[in-house]
Length: 198
Image (cartoon, rainbow, N blue to C red; front, top):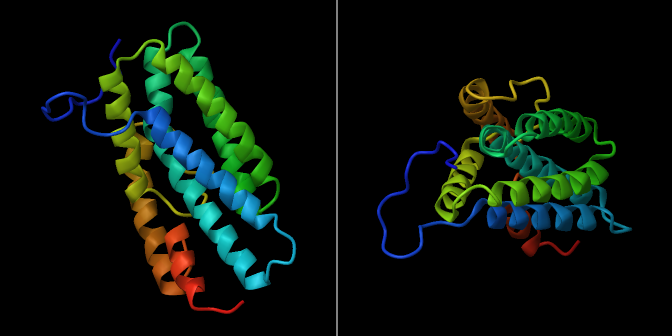
């Protein structure tokens, strides 16, 4: 069964890129590490705020890419309950984005999200080729580069609209982040705190 994605460029041997399961598992580990860092006692308020900003931005990019590519792939390729699974995760994503916006309960919802995504990927792996899963991983990584860095639970959540609006919203978010100096990636935190003593 195909996921309806454009073909990969020709290559010798294995397809170029990483399967969606590897891409998303790495991101879930990164989100879990950020949640763990936020729960450390005695964090200075500025460091806590910066970690929270990076967690929010990382999760927003991740959720946007899943809504653009993973959920449509599940909807079209997983037999029988694919549409119901996709709809369930779209609703859960809206709730998670609202939790990220309010700052309440996002960590527990992120844990649940990681388990639900692993289940979706297992179901998808049972019906899709390795090449399709690599194509899906490539699309997810590409979509994250242009995705919003702030939660927008009211934005369109299904294609084609989210593939149009998310990059536009993402551009506005990145302009706001640059203007305010808001950190949105772990690497920026490493750079920011490498020379500080607190």
